[in-house]
Image 1 (spheres, rainbow, N blue to C red):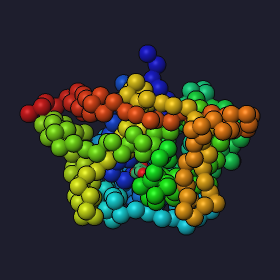
Image 2: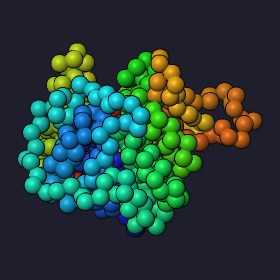
Image 3: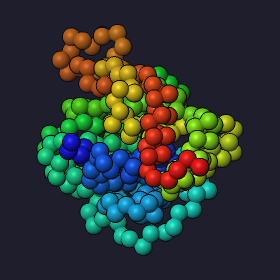
Image 4: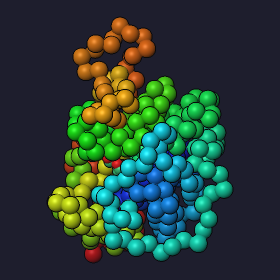
Amino acid sequence: MSKLPIHMDVDTGTDDAIALLCALLSEDQIELKAVTTVAGNVPLDLTSANTLNLLRCMGSKVKVARGAEKPLERELECTVCHGKTGLGSVQLPESQDSFYEKDAVDTIYESACSADGELIFLGTGPETNLAKALMKYPDLKDKIKRIYVMGGALHGGNMTLASEFNAYVDPEAFKIVVNAGIPMTMVGLDVTLKTAIPMWFLDEMRKIDNPYARMAVDVMDASLAVNREYGYDEANIHDALAFIAILYPELLTLKKYYVDVETQGVLTRGMTVADFTGVCEMDPAKQENIDCAVNVDLEGFWKVLLSLFGNRGGSKV
Ligand code: RIB
Ligand code: CA
């Protein structure tokens, strides 16, 4: 079976790191075309260094291109939930490799042009890079088969009462992506807030003796430690679910809604607003456009992760 061409755009961050490890472990099913970085959880220098250092210390040579250091129109707002560096207490060996010579926008376009219309784009940070690429290259929208975004929420938020972090940080970019006319799966908080790492799962992961599982455990331990500093006794691996959903779509229950993004609101900045009642159904410009994740087979998710990390050589000691 031919490999799925995937481009990942990340703001590494602890859960982005888990998603990247899952991608490296899925090399028999996917071709990771490139990884691009964006400012989000922490500033661009850190998200970029975290991404390059992680991939290189895991033996991956996939190109890493730096992207936007701030949102399209707003000042950058980071989060403390991933610690000062973005990876909590995890110290990665510093790679001597250079970043890819192209920037994120041109690298996204390069990935799309090389995938013959079959590219899957996974965004796990603010969508600034993809929005810029769509504006710079009008034909890009015809070269991406489907976008998966960890972002948005049909109900509630984690940055404000109304919005999820990635959509909140760059609502203008999220709006451009949502309205690009590209098939899109929104893996939002409605499902990712259910991915709080269970202790039994972490215990099982500790039994797996290979570099990928050890790195994942270190990152998840670090994420839990940072969250506990702020009074939360759990840590979610939002982005890992968005990646796994690409290879295991049966884990998600999807509902298609017309969705748009609030960019003018104060209380509602970055809110992903869905038409639950069909009030826009007569408006040809507001037809159902986004496949929204409304439920997740959590047991299946943890099982897939244990199998992915456990099958990479190394034994359950
Ligand atoms: O709201 C959670 C999302 O925002 C995750 O992608 C996390 O890494 C942060 O980017
Ligand atoms: Ca992220």
